[in-house]
Length: 173
Image (tube, rainbow, N blue to C red):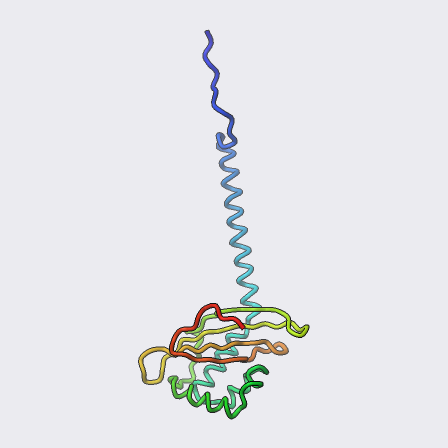
């Protein structure tokens, strides 16, 4: 009598070459996702380049109480709703609440939101930046949010707000 034949069912996972191939495909897929995500981050950072610098300059000028210079960095939306005199009064209160030093606040900033789209047939970019800055002579932080918009290739502040509580991370225009 002869020995019975091996009756194991056929499987593509039985040989080590197939296992290695499947592992390689999975690793390539994961690497591709990482590359796409990295490219996405680089694109967002390049599209918003300059917004953080312009916002830092604005917040620094406002902290020093230089309302006239800070107002020059504002965009059409803020100017349409706020006169230079009204902004000066707001800035006076803001500067009094901050430490007033001319340092950059970029160490405490967070890019909270980026949006790109079209308005009246023109391409527009928006960036929301949150700051956490020390209060003048008091414990705690003051949270400042600037909403930046690109006008003719230059970033300008379209809105500013401050609060004693941290802003939500899902700010929208």
